[in-house]
Length: 577
Image (tube, rainbow, N blue to C red; front, side, top):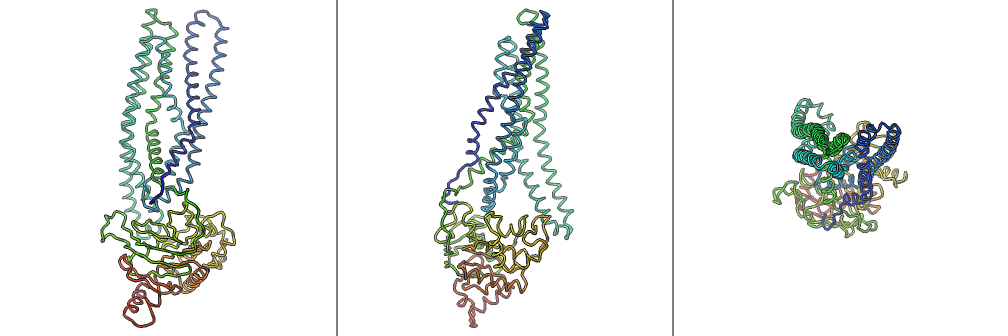
């Protein structure tokens, strides 16, 4: 959005967890130190207990080991719980912002391939699982290496070489996983979108016998997605198997070299077992990281996606909450191009539309099919952003309002009305918890749908939307959508072909609703589909192939006189009807 400053809320949320991550690093250090307990205990048993035959020494050593392992278990539990809490906190802190940001991205038709809610879930699941804990053990691998060098430098060098080989295989696994992760995610997104849309239009699909063809097309996408998945897994599986095999071989090598050192009286027999355990501790975090590379790569992709998504999401929270507008509309050089268009005249959806309306005005927008009426409607309410020009309400463009604040003062009835899963009352109230029963009933009465709702089994509590909602006719849905549009007495009401599914009684109700809205001071703009839709307006705007050809009072545009211009306009409206 022009002039909007991007604020990376994801980066801010991560910074808030710095103290928690610091404590987790501390716990990981303590856990790594306590992991030396087993090696030291074995060393003492072989070198002290077995040589002395002292049961008291063995019991004393074992008592110390029990206490140390209890602390080990406690710190490991605390670390895991903190990681889980951090993941949950991140998803909670960013969940609402992600939902709103995704809606805004869909509104501007940018970044819609990113699913911030899904990526937050991936991040939370990773932090709550065992993979994250193993990563925090990796920085403390030098601790075990240091102990091995103290036991004997040769043993330390052998394990260093093994650790370098394991780390190299881990890097290769990461490169392979990262190479395929983006492609796999894109393929999965395309497949998911196709299946979702097919299910949503299941009635049409089944009625026209399209299910077989759609299933075949979905299968082709599935084959492509599964192939990508297998290719991404092949390299990491080979490297993970190599790492495990190498780890076992290295421990045997340590035993062999240790035995040679014992025979040469350079270390004690207990040090052989301790060194073998320590070498396993050196390679274990690396081995676990390699085996979890697919999960790690997925999490890294989620991290980058969230960072980039919020980096490119404008923040308008700092704007001042302006007073309720009166409804003075100023449209200046409004221009919109098609999605993938170079800015050429052939690809223009709307070109340089300008007009002014005062509070209480009613504007009827007429024109042939594909003349730009619906495009203008979306631009007027901010559902789409113009490529040029702007829409002002009481002198303020949409980006001068805090995010979402202007929407309360706008009513919009699109061509295709969709009721969200919930009650009729919730849909009319726009799911606003501050909407009172009086607000909902007043809006329903203004839309002349109150009596219709009362005839339903549960009245305003009737569940609609989704698969489990009560089936409603197109006219009922459209009139409930009208009630949703007019709640809170909005300053601007835009109705896109509002009588497309209405009968004669519905047309009369719509005409009275428009008159009532204008009498209350609302500015009403109607995209005309039938002549009855503009019966209650006082101005007319004519569109032709995205261009405004005329804007004047209804009397001057349509007139009662049989002038060529007025006759042409009336004929066009009759053809649309």
